Image (tube, rainbow, N blue to C red; front, side, top):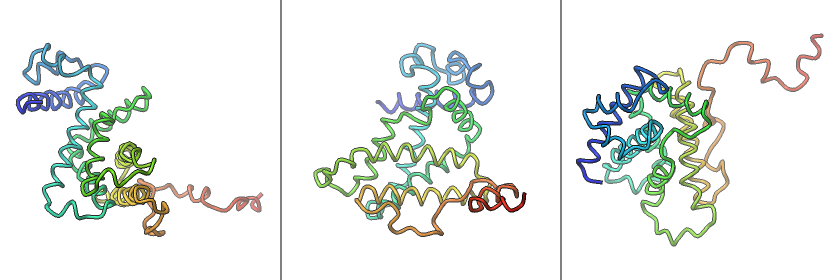
Amino acid sequence: MSQRTEKMKRRIVEAAVEVFIEHGFERATLREIAKNAEVTNDFLGRHFAGKLDLINTYFYFRLGDALELISADEAFSDYPLNDRLAALMQSYQVLLRPDREFVDQSLSLSMRSAVMTMGAPECMERIFDEVIRVDLDVAERPHPFHHLVPSWCVLANQLVIAYWMNDCSEDYHKTARLTRFIAKLLANIWNEKPFFEGLDQEDLPEFPFQMPPWAILFSQPAGWGSSMS
């Protein structure tokens, strides 16, 4: 893709975000998006299959931007795998923050339509694969699980974003905790270690929102309330 084409595609995606926020996914039209992006309907149609493709491309662009951001650190390839994965996912979250309303719409759409809208999975797998293998010869990893890890990273990343949308903690520290936890699990799988190696009770993620007082009833041992009858 030429730089000019990518620049125009990004402009279209940014226009789509504005139109989706203003009108909602169902009422938004490709014609309106093309008008806001100052491109022809034909150009938009040649590069995007529809509104869902625009959403997928938005998330793909943001993850690619996050990779470019963290890769600027010359020492990045020397970091442990769990730190590389956590850095990518956390940078991605920061880049999504200005469009939180749009992200919320996309999550709702995903739940209603039972389709994956959180970003061009195959393309995003390649980004995670690049982070995983940054200092590794592919031939060194013949284990049958290894080719699945990038796709698991995509799914885990989607889970983290859904969690983040419900996170009421200051500076989203609960989401940061979950991100580090999941990154460690994924790194352990890749390195063929026990899932929870290097993790303890303090690393476990919390509910993203404040639990109501009555919720404590559900955390009691079985039969706890039977003596109250």
